[in-house]
Length: 402
Picture (cartoon, rainbow, N blue to C red):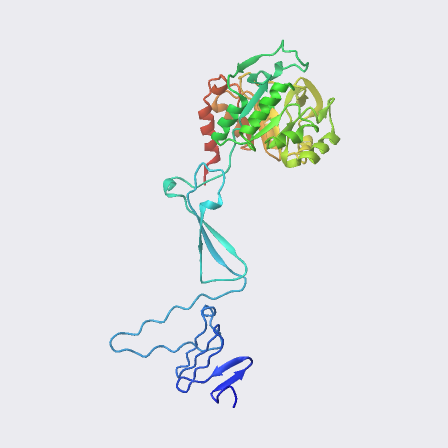
């Protein structure tokens, strides 16, 4: 006698068992089809979201006299190929924030639509704490802090009085010498969330080098470093924690731009970690780039051609208006206007800022494209301009209403 009764049949590897009263056909656990007198078709949970188009809809239940039949369920939305709808809600957006982090988003998927690709929709919603304020975005002029180091000490020096003769400080005019270390200033900037500041070594002595490295260790990735940078030491400062190295004299050698040295530096540290210092002084009515502690005029002048060319080799420019730097007599507005007009990459201006109004003038003259450094005028460097007010101004520029 066969292992299977007359009520059982093998079809393509499945055992079909016929139940006399319900005509139930059982197949694998993942797919069961039950045929009744109402022709209702049931599928597995894995297939219910999209019933086969060829099968008729389920018949409505019979009317009940005691209560009206419930309305039929709304059909699911049509499925289009390669479509996914997803909503993301931005919450806890700090008006002073410089970035929108991933943890600021709550994802609200629409579970009724599925496909292999996704299209996202973003809905901006400030947090409850800032509902009354306008939604803000990252933009505006930035304040770039500085740490100038001379013989291991943090100082503010009138730039035009620096000597290109080593050990000759007879003409040096010092506005301020701090009793705090370079590392302490770096820590202050880190705690206040200020990035892109620069550490300048005004001399190649070991004490200045040690102080600069201490600042980089205190704020790794947050500071740029300059002063005596060349192909021999550039990479070591990056390894010590500098975000960028700032270069002037090594590239503008003997009054000329040394293209081979410039390419060598780009090869060593990468364009994205290189800042070119185009500090300049007026000569014959034009701005000439100066080197060797700003005492040597080069034959390279700031104009559209040279700025555009150099922008292909670096990430940023740093420009000291040497004629006004450290004198607290106001900014070189003509230079700021030139930088805002010509520079295709980020550029920071330094020199002559005394009051907040000077920073506003830089914002206007540079058409919002020139960042600013303040040195001798700050109270942390012996000046009268409150550092706190400058930091507040900085964050106000980063939060423009839209």
